[in-house]
Length: 266
Image (cartoon, rainbow, N blue to C red; front, side):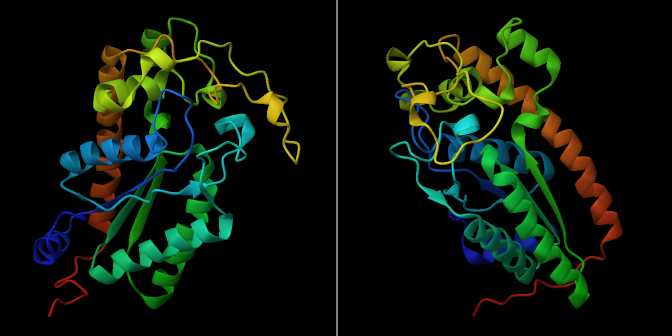
C-alpha cells in the first residue's frame, strides 16, 4: 500500500479488494536475527495472501505489545521496543475505522507477534461494533500465521523434536523462514545452540532476567535451513489462502457492495 499511488489504491478498494494489515513487533530474536523479524514474516505472509485473494497489503504495524518472558524472552532485553495495551488497542481500532472510511468492506489483521493477539482483537472488536451501530457493513478477520502450520509440516521440519510454540522464539521456524525470505539478514554463525528454555508455568513480576537464556532465544535455531523455510512458507501460505479466501468470499456474499469509495482524492 505504501508504494501505491492514491488513485490506484482507490481503484483497488472500489472493486472490493480486502485490506491485509501485517502486524509485528520490534523485538530481539537473539544474535542471529534482526529486530524486525516478526514484521518481515508477517509482511511476507500478507503478501502471499494478498496475491491469492486479490487484496492490498497495508503498511505494516512495526511495534507490538510487550515481550513476555515465557514467549519472547521478556521486555527487559535490549532492542525490544514495545507498546502498552491501550496503545495497541487504539491502533487496531483506528486502522479498522480508517480502512472502512476508505471504502474497504473487509479487513484482515495478520499477526506475527504472539503477544499482540488479544489487544488486536479488542481494538478490532470495538471498531466493528462501532461501524455496525452506524449501519456500515464491514467485516474483519484476525489471525496468527503459525496457527496454519499443520502437524505434518511440524513433523517434517522438527523430526519429533518440536519444542512447542511457547518456546519457538528465535528458533527453527522463524530462522528457517528468514533464511528463505531474507538470507542476507541471518547470521547462522552466531546461533547459540542452547537447550530450550526451562520456564515456570506462571508469570512473576518483576521478571527474573536470569531465567531467559543468554541468547534471548527460547529454543535453538541450529537445525534451521532455507529448505525448511521454503516448505513452511509454501504450506502455511496455501493454508492461509484456502481458509481466509473462503471466509472472505462468504463475507462478500453477505455484505452489500459499496457503489463508490467513501473517500475522495482532490
